[in-house]
Image (cartoon, rainbow, N blue to C red; front, side, top):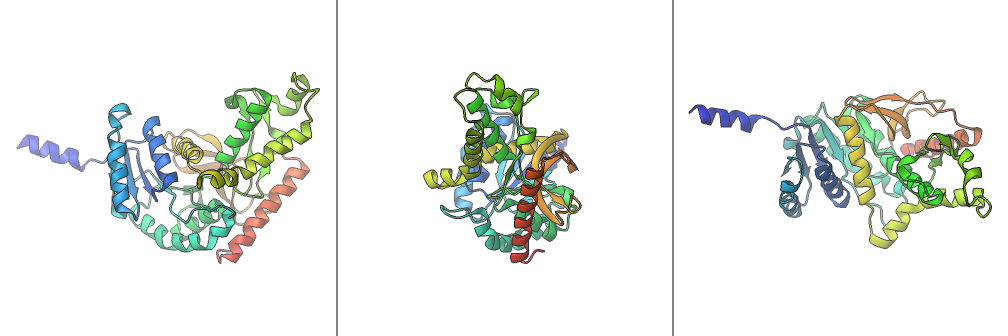
Length: 330
């Protein structure tokens, strides 16, 4: 009898950290797979309309758990996301070839108006990480529809764009991208801004590295740097044109954000965060360097940008403000 009581208590106990994923298409499942390999979560709840496929994915993933840190993966409904530490939302119409991220804004805002109250009902205290595109618009929508503190609603923002930036700079300079520190800020989209003035290799500024490079006499610096940014900005279009979707890079970048939240790291990441007093941008979500911990966004850093970068960031913010107005959010 005592053994049965003990087993019942164990069955009632939740496993933590607990992450729930709403929308389990390519992005959602790449994220979950990376979570397993990294050992980030102890329990993962998956919610999706396609129950049959979801059941197959859960079985497939679960069979790999003997090779990972202990984790329980279940196919559930909204009621199963209760007590989640983190809810990651990838649900939405995906970007098709030839579409911009902003083209799909209206349909996904309408979808969020339905699903966000459900998430809030069952997981009111979780941090919400928004991934669906256009991520800056939908992060704002999630904040409005959930009525949560804005610091508890975060968009994946330009974390992936900045990773692409670091990769390409590292490749060009023949330096490990983990030693490249550079940001893409603003919209996660066509008006995003490369912050060249703060780009660093190791402890030195990029502008100081270039004169020491062995290829300095053969490299047209401005032309090459412009090519790098164009490739960063257009990466999603190129990938979608070739394979129909992007998922591996965003999956790994979401794990990085999740680790910063769940481990209370106070890490600085260029996530999409709520601003209402940042220079004169007004009330919107925009990617800026933010300190992330288990309460969400702790602080937003105000970088000393050059005049050109400031103007481009303002233009990016205004572009998002215009879209918010178009979809009836502002």
